[in-house]
Image 1 (spheres, rainbow, N blue to C red):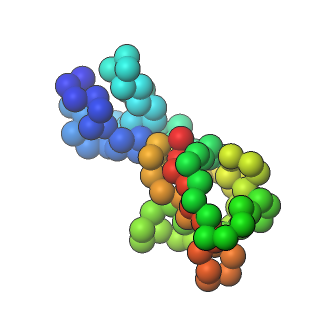
Image 2 (cartoon, rainbow, N blue to C red):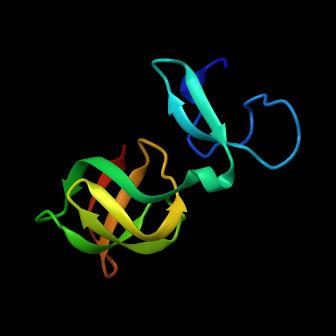
Length: 115
């Protein structure tokens, strides 16, 4: 694949995949080896999201939080367990580098980047 560094986890279009059938998505991107693993929407589901590079408004938070992973996305309940966000039910994988913002109520308490 040309320009593997431009492919994002969850991407469906622009990958020049042959054949029809069910939609296929980029489920894993490994830039150093120029490898993109493709799978179904089900293959994108995870029960946890590893995070790094935290930034806190005040003190670090651990435990139940509300989490937003896209600018216009829903705010969902989760548990922050060290450097892992644990979801109560499987949800679509967050692309590495995507912002993960933590709330208590409607107040931002911090953020991190998905790994």
